[in-house]
Length: 158
Length: 158
Image 1 (cartoon, rainbow over the protein chains, first blue to last red):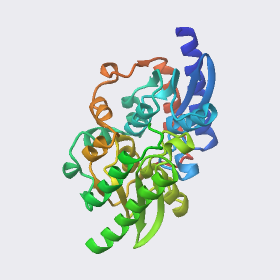
Image 2: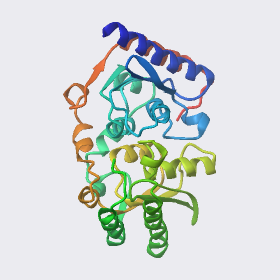
Image 3: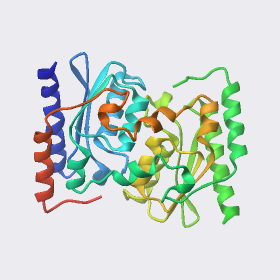
């Protein structure tokens, strides 16, 4: 297992370097593996795609799910060159792979200028206590759509 | 301001209902506004696009950033029909809009079968304490790429 893990992690690290050298974005890469085969990969493309969600993990999740024709990563292992940020962790919880292997830590990323700490600090706070201005409006009108969803019979749950 | 807010929030709620009725995914919609104009919108497309990251906010952020040709949402307001999940909140922190307005709460979403609580509980924990299996490997090899990034002169920071 360790030998296979290292092989795929080196591919993720190589993707991080290649993306950086091409000018795609920051130095982050990710490879997703199922049954010993690569089913998706990605590197950071935030600045070249004008997409703040295009972190390596999100790009790789989208790629793997497209290849697997499924909105979940059942029985997959995600190899990422750096500890995922809160956005990517959230994406990974929704995608539900079997395990995650990462290389550099969030502290290593912060030392290179990529600091997630504000997001980690803010997420557990209730919306009104966050530094980010958040307001609630028209709650009841939105709830009506949830009631319609609950009552709907033909739907795909996720 | 309140009148304008309600107008755009009703558009977000309408997007949540229309997407649900088309079978795109769950009942969630989002509209992004700059200087009084809609610059992007989206609804949940997880199950129809086979993309676990295609929450309404992520779809709208990607759409608005593509339209604005920028990887940030400077001076934008994000109207979302439901309190953003941790993945979407992370995406919003990276996109940096001026403010977020939401309608239904995370409790309303949970009552309709969309429960974010596990993710909120897990994110603040150190990786080794999460329910989700996470392991670290080859840290030093990944750090070498960060050092190369730090030393690189021609790069777009974000």
